Image (cartoon, rainbow, N blue to C red; front, side, top):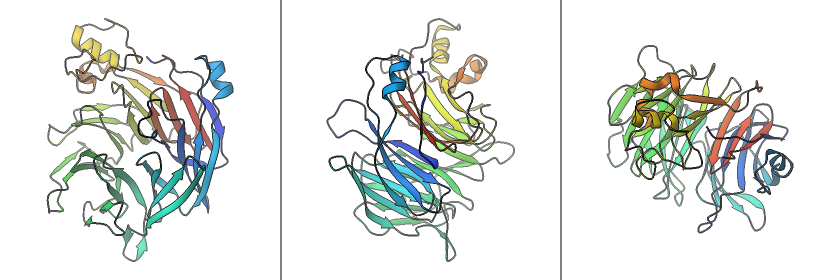
Length: 378
């Protein structure tokens, strides 16, 4: 288990719907110190840029004193912020409950943020605009996808004022989340409890694959791709269940894990140590799932063979991890009663709407009108 230091709460005066770390300038090796937050449930919402100074020393006390985030700049935003994607250190994409997608430019030199371009009312039901629920960016190109309550997917190019492609009938229900799994492939989770995959090179609007939860149709709300094994996806459900999907398998998830008492709003693999996974929920909880110990058990044949380490940044994919390509997320069924989970905010009761993690900093945003920042010490 990672040793998590004390959590710093920065009260911001509005509900926080999304939090994202802003990438460092290309060539910088240190973790980013800046992040962006979006608000919701106000008549005029805020898009804000923050900075957190690295503390001197690793003690929780030093962290509490020196690590409270500082507001650098902010701008008003129309509608609820429903998703944020940081393309690089200066370009930030934001989606709105009005159905629009906006591209903002952030200048670290001038500590300012300005609107660069807006794709208005991309999503609508009839003549009425509806929420653009999610975004995903393609790391290998300037391509972006948006999806919404209308069940539609738009493919955008940053240098084009209009969508370059629209999949009108991607789903008959709301698409709750979408992610690029390959440079030409996206996976989306829907209100109807399906996981659908499209190859954007193909002219057909029909998904290449459709997978679903067995039994009752429970909405899937969020999805994340394993950073080193892109065929593995983790999804969170309306019923609080965490599901693991192997894209090499057809139809059903390979693992279902009882998790939260209410909706899972976001799920994230640690980008450098994906045997560790984080979820946040409507029930006010923020969980760390420690799959590293499961990976150790899977290779040794008995539990407790060695202590799992966050500091080793093992990836569970045979790249310096020593697990012979056995993913704990595929072997967890046999050992699920031994998988360790840790509640990082045990006394919180209001919804944790969003989380993001980089290196040793875990960021989350809440309906308690606060940004929450935790440091992983070891």
